[in-house]
Amino acid sequence: MILLFFVGGLALGYAGGGDSDGDGLTDDQEAILGSDAHKADTDGDSLNDGREYFDYLTDPLSADSDGDGLKDNEDKFPQLLTYQDINGVTTTTTKILRGGEGQEIHQQVAVEVGNVITIDWINYLKEFALRRAELVMSYDYLDPEKEDWEAPGYYLVDEQSMMAEIVLPTYEGVKEWEIPWQDPAMTPSDWPYHLYRLPLETGQSYQFNIFYHELLARDEEPFFATTCEILGTEKLPLDLKLGQREYGVYVGECIMEHPTFDDPFFRVFLGENPRLTIRVYLTVERGIILRYTTPFFRITPSKSVGFSDFIVEH
View 1 (spheres, rainbow, N blue to C red):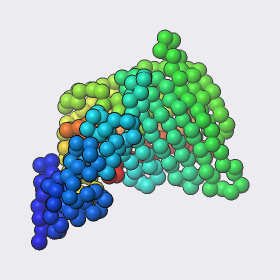
View 2: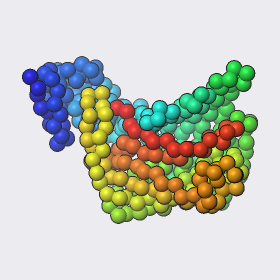
View 3: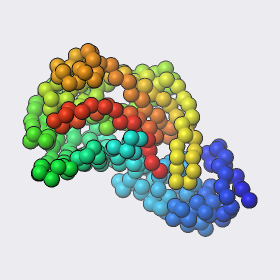
View 4: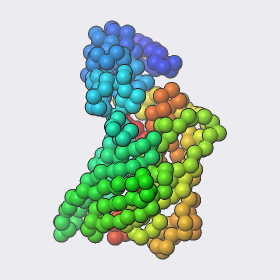
């Protein structure tokens, strides 16, 4: 027998199992997740298991999904989400924390392109504009003749002078700069979170800058001037452990403009005065980022350039 359950207005069909505790998850689904089929709120955070899994995208087994000391029902940003590059190259785990300077975005990034590059960083934001970053970068070389390495780095923006001190580990060693900071700016990984503080309405547009330390290391202009417009809403299908679900999302399209690149390698790929288009998809109900794209500029001898398209795994 096939039973239909309505979660967030969407009918989902599953074979048998019942829903003993009435939390929107069948007993069979609860067995997959490891939640208690006889307790509507397994973790005791005042959010029932079905709402947590389907609507909040939080962990029904943890009262504090992102580990920031706030229960999920008290936390404006309770999610701990993993985004997988659809090409299978990069995995990013993201959580938003509350700190003394405002919001903190903690991301752990792993890039597998033969060599394995990992970055563990925390970006400190004031009204979702970057003010400080702490990072540890490591390279695990496929070539056994090359020595693996790990090194820390940071950004530090002076709010009075708007000058930024940057220390960046690269395969050529640790590099240091002091540069004018184009505010508001954020890194390629945290740019979608700029929209978290803004009222999302169709037709609205927002201006900010995206900073690429990879380009700084190549002696190129590191900032892209960016305009993001909310194009409208649509349905975005997401493959979950418990089957596919459609989410209503706002679609934001960002146009990134940059002066002509001096490096002839980049010109071959990007042309003169490149304009790059990237997108972000945020749920209409809670503003959770389900998908986003970003260009990348690898700090490698090949100077590779391309795009990553990330979609949340849940």
